[in-house]
Length: 395
Image 1 (cartoon, rainbow, N blue to C red):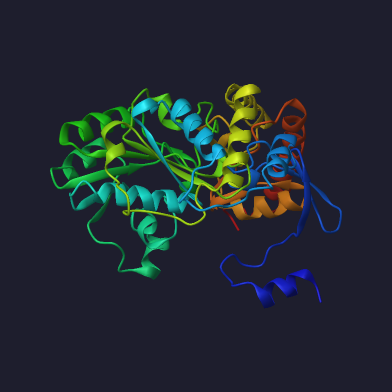
Image 2 (image 1 turned 120 degrees about the horizontal axis):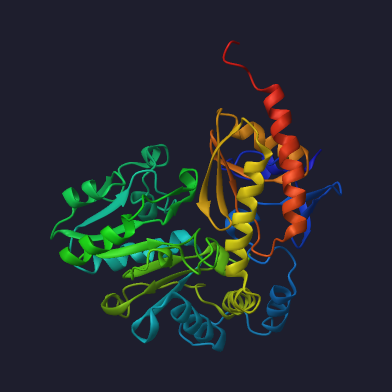
């Protein structure tokens, strides 16, 4: 009996059957149970900021092993240190506050409750957005295919077009918050329209509405800035974080700015495991390493280098490149993204397809010339293989 048989007998069928069983990683590579090596250009879906088996992560895990969990009845030094760092790098400063959770979904659940504390009933979110799969987070997710099997969801949520005109028409004194992603990763790495965040900040301020920016996939240097909203120069009321801030451990956070920091009071939200000393120690080590190695700048530079190299392949399958930094969506001229992902895996390359016409790249922030050269060589071969196998319009 194979490991896939074991998987199907033991695991709930929410992900389908995996093609590969991974057993270890090193840097930007992972290895399966048959010893095959893969170049990891997905990074656990924008999670493994420092790659695999990084000394900073291993060191933090080891040194914090003497105190793993104490509950939020008590404070710990790793928690306080991480909160201070997040307030500094986000720009929230002394007036900001942090709530730690276990995932991006939980961070957005906390943000929904933050919005509810304004006393206003309505929440606005954008079409094709993704904010998580629990009921509250799913209620503000703008993907009908994910929402419909679980309706009715939370009421008083309006999913609007990603235009300033739509926002201006929907906003009003009964709106508590607008949720936005700087780049819609699950929609195929789709950036917001030029000037959207700036205009949204003006409208939300005018109407007393919270602007909550979901930085779960775009945060921690992924886009060539610490956070995606910083590209626009605006100041949000709150941001939600997860994925890359933990480098592989399960952590999420809600960071509030200014007056929004006073909305949640004792007893109004909580968590058992959120902000425990283990995950906070690792997260702080990850962010320290990103800062000391200037990996935010590396993300910007390597992202530009990677996009230029993909363009230089000159494949007719590549129709568009989207995103910023090391969050890249490769738009395809044919709906063969799943085939590209499968062929890439056969060639020892890990990427993924958020939809049928997009291949998503979110490699570790540590990539350099060697990894980019290997990726381009392999990806070029993958595109050629798929192109030769893809059906023509005549057929």
